[in-house]
Length: 431
Image 1 (cartoon, rainbow, N blue to C red):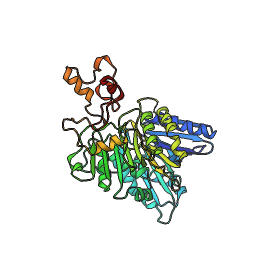
Image 2 (image 1 turned 120 degrees about the vertical axis):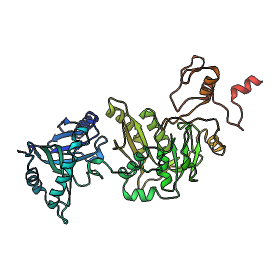
Image 3 (image 1 turned 135 degrees about the vertical axis):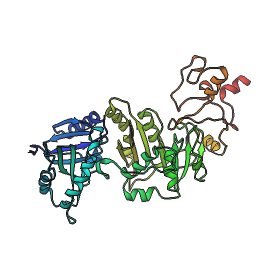
Image 4 (image 1 turned 45 degrees about the vertical axis):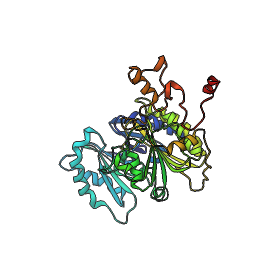
C-alpha cells in the first residue's frame, strides 16, 4: 500500500487551471539548472515532479502556492482506519514541531474538509514540542494521501498557500484582500515594520473605488489616489487621501513617495515598464502591483514581464512575484529595496509641474464613476462623442481609439493645462 518513490519527489499546489503554467515553470527551472526532471499533474491544483538532484524552493516559483518533499504515497487507504498507515509513514520524519493536514483547493476535494479536521486531531499526538521542521499530509482523495515534509525556509507562510484573511466591512471592494495578502506573503515581518510605518506616503494608480487605498489608509499612510472613477466617501473623509482624476500612465508625482501600488487593467509588459520607470526615476522607494495575464501562455507572459523588470534587480531591488490566493488571472509583484542599496534621486519628468498644479485644483464635478479597477473614467473624447450623438468607444472622425487609460483628450490632442501657454501649433495659427 505504501509506494516510496525511487527518485526524490516534490509535490506542489497551485490555483485550479494553472497546472500547465506551473509545469512550464518547473520544466524551465530544471532546464536552467541543467537537470532532467519528470513533471506531471494527475488532478486539479496538484503538480508533481521527480528529479535526480536539486529541487526549487517556493521563492523560486511564481505559480506555486505551497510545496512539500514527498516521503510516501499512500493509495487505497482503508476508510475504516486511515490513521494507522498515515502515522506509520510520518514516524520516519520525527521529530517535527508542526503537522499540517490539508486537501488541494478544488471543487472535487471540498467534501473532504470534515475528514481533514478529524485527521488533524488524531495525528496531532505525533508532534514533538522540541522537534524541528514541519510534516505535511495532503489528502488527495478519501483513500489517497501524500506524506512528507516542508523544506527548511521553503514552505508557504500559510498552510496550502491560503491565508485566512477577514474581509474588512469598511473596505469598498474585495480587491483589498489582494494587497493585504501581498504584504503578508511577499514581505517579511521586518520589512513590513520598516516600510509600512504610519506617516509614510503612497500613490495608488487605478485606485477607484479604493480597495488598495484602504489597506494603506488603515496603516495611516498618506495616499494620492489616481483614477477618473470615484473613491469611497469614507476614504475621502479619513483626511489621508487626495484624489486626482488623471491618467495613471501619465501621472508623475511632484515629489518622491514611499510606495507605489497599482492594480490597473493593462497588458503586463506595459505595466512592468511603468513600474520600472517609477523606480528608476526615484519617484518611489517600493512597489506592489498586479500583472493581468492572458488566458493562455501565462508563463510566457510572465517571462516577458520579468525581462522588463530585470534592471531593477541590477539596481539592488528584490523582485518577488506570486500567483496569490486572492488573485485571479493575474500575478502580484512586490519590488522591495535591498538593505544596502541607495535609491536614485528624483528626476523631474515632463509634465510633473502640470501634475503638481493639477493636485492643487479640485476634480471636475461632472466626472462620472467607472467600474472598479478600470483605472480610466470619462475623457474629453467621450464628452465629444456624447455631444455628437456617438456611442462611447466609437472613434471620433474615424480615428482609432488608444488603449484604456492612455487616451488623449480631444481626439488625440493634448488639452492645454490652465495657466500654461498654448501648444506651438495654436500659436502659429494665431499669427
